Image 1 (spheres, each protein chain N blue to C red):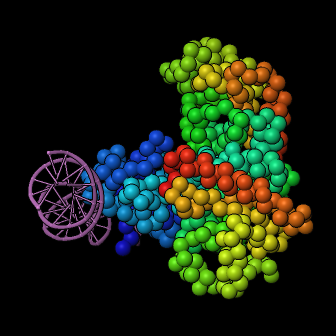
Image 2: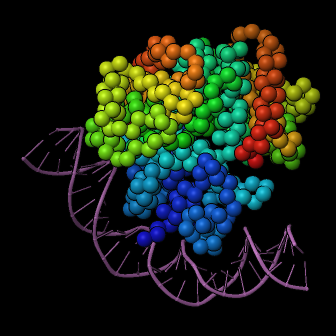
Image 3: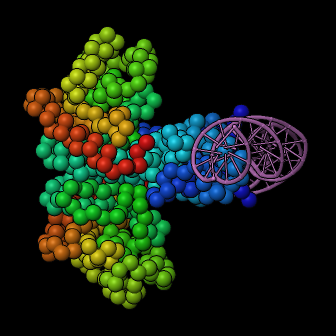
Length: 249
Length: 249
DNA sequence: ACCATGCTTCCACTGAACGGAAGGATGGGC
DNA sequence: GCCCATCCTTCCGTTCAGTGGAAGCATGGT
């Protein structure tokens, strides 16, 4: 049952955003491995550069692994094309700009631009959040395979704030709305202090490849004023993607 | 000799920027594995999400691996703190902004901001370049451990353009200059069309944690006009790093 | 109909991976 | 100074997971 490959991956999966640095013992415990086995695996991973060992003796993910990860088409290709557009959008809005893709039944944030004056949000490049509670999530869900959509709506939907929409019927209505208007406005569903305006980025084959959003403070200006810029940016990226024959899927 | 772990890593290392998508056979060949062995390993990696299989049957690096890679402190922690400053610098200059760290005897680019109006450069997030031919490289080399510096200067230095400085003595002089002025100006050493102005980012323990640069067109304005902004940005990030007790090394 | 290319499955053999145990290293309490 | 706790490293005999050659399948070009 426990193949070596699986164990190696377990070791990698032991790291998380809140615990990015682990001692050998912690690592072994989290990966469910005997200490001596972990010691050997971690040693090999470290030699290669997948892990690195800090001055304090604790291990963390290494630069080499990060490099390989950076080759993931949904990160590299997408970001390369999108960046100039995101940059423009940032300049107009001076707020956090996020780019995210769908993976399984979650949103994965692929890039985030943030300025000193933007709201402090807890999303993180490489982070995951559920689809129903974020702007980008609503966009991706609205245009996802209907089968997936039903699966998500059938599962219990976590409540983050009292503004989080957890009712399937209401969500369904919102998703229809997203499809007609082309944007999603998610108001305080994940954090009360912020709301986001999101729009879909279309890939070359008529599918939604990603979603982008602007996060604005909840007390700030009317979110609708951001809609045109967000929509234009999304359209710009979509066009650039279809031209470029880019390394997306 | 061939441990399973090493083989898994060989499979991952088979992907590169120019060949981010591979068939099973290519993968097996590049990793030096029999087809059936590769088939099994790749299968396990794919189930976990380290690799993904495209519609065309070819494999590429998966989002899951990218996520783990994103936990590398030198990427995540550094970028989180630096981003707002880089953003400001971009707004002032409207040119490519690059953030890079030292790994071994090379520069690894950790982030890059680019606008529509910036020069098109071939550096890539996750990419590697030698130290002697880039602005960030000169900065990192200038402040590196003297032992490493000697090792780099002793090795043969690749020539990219006729402006590339490959003479150790001259490089040594330039590095001393970088240390006194606090910035490096690398003119056409890697590509004739661009030059870069780079400055060191200091970590909390008085070591150089990273370097940042602005890349400007070679025919453009005087590079020296960028120096104050670059220097100020680098100083800002350095300060933010020492405050934050950040997840750097 | 044939061949080329690339993928998948099977299975008997074997040596690489395993992990318990013993030995270091470090550091803190008293 | 001594003891104990925590964490890391090394060793080595046993065993079973990993191996890879071979045969079979799928596609698609000519």
